Length: 291
Image (tube, rainbow, N blue to C red; front, top):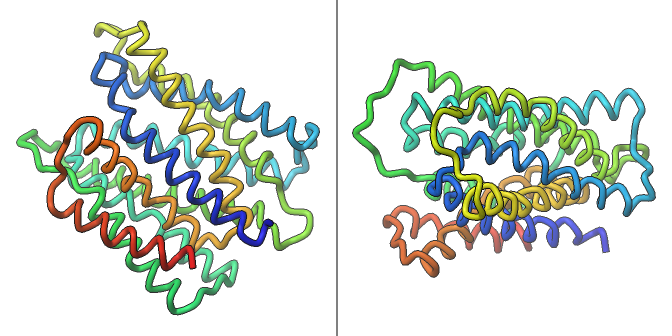
């Protein structure tokens, strides 16, 4: 079963994160800041982690290697999210998102160089198409808002590197083809721990002087939506454990396809032509990668 488990988990992550992306703006537009949304996500990681550990009879990997790699991956991912918040405050989203969305390139390069991962010609074509689609799907219309210097570009590049390295470390730490490597549930635990550690920073970044929606459309809606993100991360850990990082990571980064489809159905939002083209390219890429 595990020979194709990576495909099941990869598709599940793509769907979960795609649905999450379609609804995440609901609490934000209702007056619940994104930084608090991160805080809610960190809390939703706790029950997901508890369930995951129960599935393996609480056998958490707690040797020095597991703690170091698990916390490194977790802190890279969580800290990168907080840096992204600051980056979007001072930089243009229509440039920031395409840069960061290409983080699978970092994972692919590291996995090929150090993990010696290989793929067929068809899979490499799928990988290239996936990277093209990721950039197209991350398109944001330009806005006439002032850009403050070039610090935002540095921050975007830092997040790009952090998320790419995070996925590589997760694969290096939990590769199912190597005996004694971490379980996906342990990777999830250390990511949960990392998210709680940096949670105070997210709270400090929040402007509590503004009106914050603590009602159902705010904090409770955020909890429901962020639960999709939390479960998606657990499946991400499973997918990258059983599959090749050079294939799994680009495939899961195509979650915006689901987001666009749901936005079209639910909100009647017609995306730009470049995003439609990205969806077509993404579907071809998914087919080639899945094969």
